[in-house]
Image (tube, rainbow, N blue to C red; front, side, top):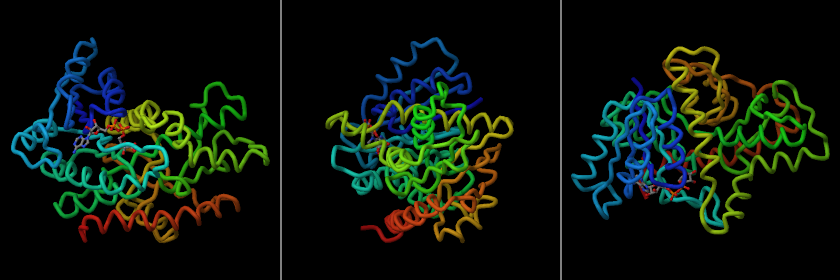
Length: 339
Ligand code: APR
């Protein structure tokens, strides 16, 4: 029995993500929570003739801070017994906003939701999508630490969309019709220049023409801006993010059921994952997205590919680490020295 929970299920990411979860043969029970509309989304999805049963839980009307008893009860019911919690709750980016501009609002939302996770399903895998992931994952970790239930192997920042974009954009350049056949590690963080695609470590190896490399790196780092601009004020990536979030959740569930050899880049607390300490020491960052071997306990092993970076990637990594340190610190101090 696998129970999955989507927090922020009525949103642009939450709805297609919930749809993918509802039709997945890997999920037996799906539970949706949001501050609006969740019973409607759940009722709609419930008509789909797939395996997963579905429940929709909504916060008390007008209660955005989760202070009312009805909201607490809804969270409790939604989360109790969860094996995996996926969190796309928050506000999306508008044109001109960076992911970091979202910080203030989304930091509070994630903190509040993780408090509920720590109470009602402390052993669940937690997959954070709410941006800026570089800061919201440290926020989640600090909240779980304070509650005494932090298991670093079970907390993930979802960076899969960066991998998905890298696969797609490289596929376009080299003429690969099925980009999923390309394994392209993307490391670092999940915002602009903190994102580092490592094409030198692609499998099978890919040859990117010299004159296309800078534009390709830039497109992977800032691909989200293309979507924000094209949506013209209506938000940021939702459908591709839902796909990426589901793809990561699916890998985690498969690994939890014993499937071997599943490796996904994901943003983790390095000192708590085997092999991660060396990467933390080398980068000076406690949180980093690296390829992680997934297993029944979650993040079984962090794989250090950073030492194989070529000169171009080393420069990108230096730049990424600078930004990432600031983002991580912002998340940690949001919990420990509240504004
Ligand atoms: N608890 C639960 N759900 C919440 C809360 C909360 N405290 N606050 C907001 N939400 C819900 C909103 O009601 C909405 O349904 O989160 C959902 C967010 O949906 P959208 O506004 O459509 O935003 P979306 O495009 O899905 O992006 C959500 O994911 O990738 C990130 O940058 C993105 O941080 C943003 C988040």
